[in-house]
Length: 80
Image (tube, rainbow, N blue to C red; front, side):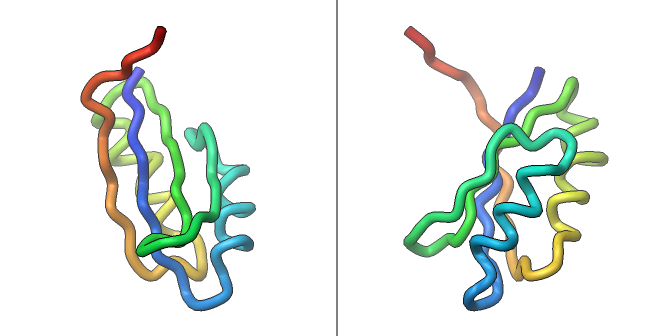
């Protein structure tokens, strides 16, 4: 499995709505609206990096209200 975070900027006042829409998409593990330079942070999961890039990320980017995204694949997960 491959996972990534997507940092999202939205139109003004749309963060909560966008996060709720993203939460229901295939491949989305979590979607939360936050404060700071980004409005929503999403964690994605797919079988392969190719599937993440070709299937999951484009679906996320098509949600209305999103103005910019930054995808950050997770290099390694540290769990106790």
